[in-house]
Image (cartoon, rainbow, N blue to C red; front, side):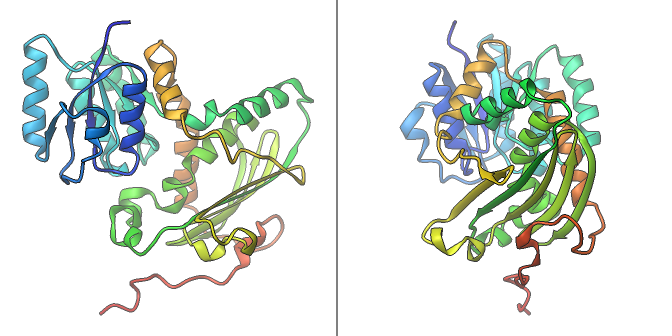
Length: 323
């Protein structure tokens, strides 16, 4: 395979180094990168010769120039804030490049319809990073469910707590209009794999949704799921209190271990894309539709099926006392 040229949007963000590493590990070249913030020294670890821009207009002009010179960009990797994905995907497709976008691809289901039209007009491909689908333990689980009794309903408790400081609420991540809130920002990949393994939504109830946590109940075709997501590290069980991340998936009252094996999933995702596989727009649609529905649902009382952490006392917003 000939070496491909990449451009990356959102080079100063948290997830960008994983994309840089994936491009490098697969033997390709990062030609240009953009971010309005200039804290991008990580580029020296992978592509010190990449052209870097802090003004989108200059980045746009550079990408257009190399396209006209015949050495254009083959792929645009989108690692920008969630609410910007749609515009940056359009930029890539209109510059005759394939696009690899971090999740969530977009915040609203109708944005997918418009992107589908633009993708068809461009004659290029739009891919979504859904790296948990490549996790060996989750792939094994999917195979077991597919081989098992089609009428069996699995009982699942999902708990995901990843501690975030006050900076989170001051950033775009703390603005639900820009990030989609906790459910979208940290939960999208879990909802994606649950739908992928256990089938479409039959019923969704939301018990809790605020600035630092969300909880609810999902009935899928083959699973009943009590879920809880939070960015409040105080909710991590004392036995693992020294950690900032707690993942727990109770599967028919037994722990399902997928705590390891995350390190190279972006590299594997890029490998699949570059070999003509990968996950497309329609693959991410079910999870986008679900988190949109959760984000816009009225809350239900804590009755029937609910996650045990849903009843924990709520935390005030860290900026609620400001004047």
